[in-house]
Image (cartoon, rainbow, N blue to C red; front, side):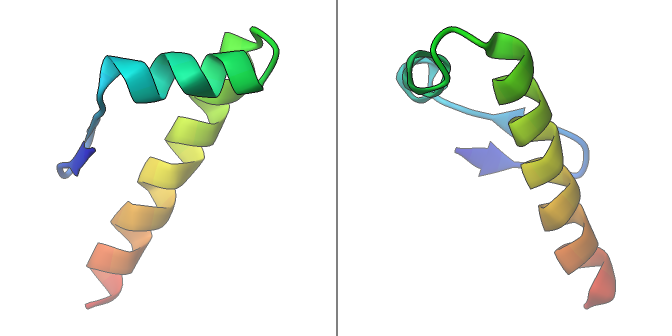
Length: 47
């Protein structure tokens, strides 16, 4: 996984494993990834 200023670049296998773990709820996975990006962005902006 690579995090830039405004995007997450993740391996397809990681993405599809996350969707499988969420029982196919890709919208939940999308929200989780957006939350993760937001958390990383806030950590970077605090420095």
